[in-house]
Length: 502
Image 1 (cartoon, rainbow, N blue to C red):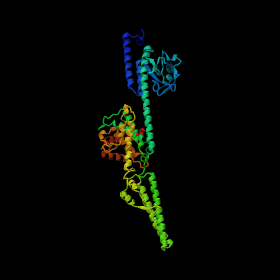
Image 2 (tube, rainbow, N blue to C red):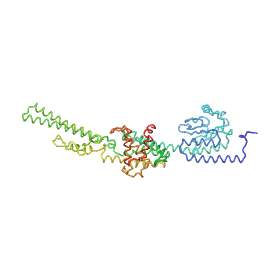
Image 3 (cartoon, helix red, strand yellow):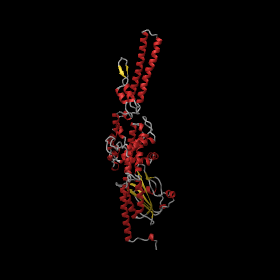
């Protein structure tokens, strides 16, 4: 009597078995249609293919027509990507001919490559290798089943695997297209970041660091044990959305005039050059007046050596005064807070004057220079600051022109609100806290932290981590930043984790 595995099945049992396989095939088709990630899709196909045809293991190879190769990211029994010439082995023969191959013993066929068996300490017996055809009917890959559990593969197994292969071909094509679109977005975002940083090289790396910090904060918020953000979760696509919004949050700076964007001091370089030239004229004016006084004294009978000695001392004092005024102005030109009394002295210096070559009396400082040098903090005037702040609106308008996928449609909105404050005093819209997306609140903390601690800004020194945290806490207590998110930022050590992840 033959062993149970070789006994013929009754018609009812065979029908039920085929029905079960067909039902499994439908379930697999549904699962493949819902899967867009190639790394997850390929193992699913192999696992279900092995189950449907009752094989020990399966392999899947995708046809690369440009390189005339077959490649696989996953083949049961092998690790890593495999690439084979189209002329290679059983899978190559199926890919070239478009015809299935069924073998009782693989070692009897000279086309079978035994190296894979030797590398994995495996013995291949029966083989079923079928082509995968796309919607156009063209071969797009090969599925190979190894070692049928009942001894050999039959025509029914071939039919089932061909059906599964057709479904797999469509699912893989969709997944590859999805992967290409993702790479397209990645390339576009990377190119946009390059464009941003080429406008302002001093902030190179800022967008990437803000993205790392914001994504790390979002992931830490998902693990909050208590508080208003307990239970907060982000899908992988939402994390990607946060990352893109963070990388592109400053893109609108391409619409800001470059002199304003890179302005490191209160006076522009050409303005400072004009001011320095005026002070040189003022020095020369003092020297000419000294010579004139000396000449007048000699004409009045004062010995030349006495007249020169008297003028030498007076001229030294006058020149030292002019140089001292210039030094004070150069100090005022730095983007720092003026010392007490500085504004009053600027007003007093605006009354100083000198004579030009035509004898006209001109002010040592222009009204514009006094106004600019009196900027209380930073290097930008109120008009220039509004121009810088307009970059957020430029960012939103630019990002809104992009046909984002449904999973990424909130990128413009998230980037638009990263300078809004909880107290409604942010910009550009001054919206209240309830209208600010939580992702934007996260980005606001990350953006400020990086701006404070960045060491590549020529107009300011990097603030130590501890000092930066003090400033963030101060803004949180002032009602500008979200205190719960800042608490997570601190307790989860987001800056340190983001740095390690780079």
